[in-house]
Length: 368
Image (cartoon, rainbow, N blue to C red; front, side, top):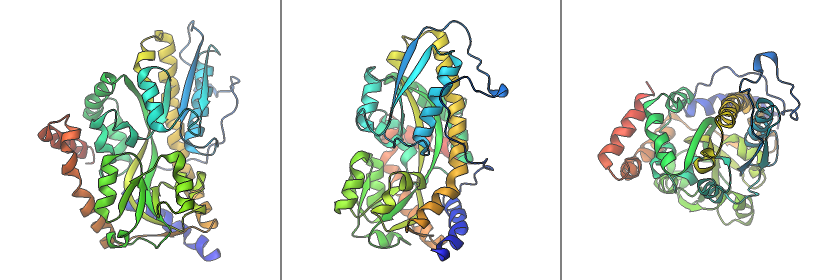
């Protein structure tokens, strides 16, 4: 155990370098949000103001009911901020742990207007907005600065993709960083794609992720997140791929022996609102939600960067073996990952492969 803790710092730094992610300086780990009680700092005083009609927003996500997990932390921050900004007129009911169904079911509910909003990963959204397939392409995101420039509301990428969401009755309110995804399994540490051969790896319901894992040499098996722990426990699959946060908060270290720092997928957390219900809201209510989202995304990003050392230390303390990859091993993964990109030009370009390639070129231009 002592030896593992000694090497923890270098492993964490390597995890950041694997993804090319030079994170900004992190603040101290944020405390869990307080109950709504008008306790905002002077610098954080609400700005929405005005007479606001009462409203209850139903908010769903698939993360654990644990305020030390980024998803629930953010949901509680959002609820608190909405309450403060609206002077108590608006409340948020948070439904964690897939209480309202799996992620795909919740997205469908948002699209149909039976659920106000949720915090969703991208992979299930590709079934509703195929153009977002680019987000899940392996090694498409160079670092967090690259991702931040892409998500900026004034970027060419945002101006292209946000109207497409609206056409599908989905409104993107904001996007937070949630880390890079790494391979986990019970058979052996992964140093090279050749080590993936013969492994059954669970993936999200995303064709690009399925093709990526298969290209890496394993066999991809889609399994809903809520069923993953049991599937690993029963040996239905050999492994899965997760960021540090879910590896810890969902207890996957209990049913997996190895984590290999492949950093193959970037994981965003998307705040998505029902466009049907958005159009039924007053301008004042919309302003509250928009301001609360902007505030929450900032807090979630702070939370993410501040907690990386704690997450890795906890995983090591709980017996998970974490290994780095050599430059040669990473290059081999990147090469196989790049072979997947052309398969999805048509998805990204709304059926036009040439347009899809142009969009990827635009996305990569923000990495400069």
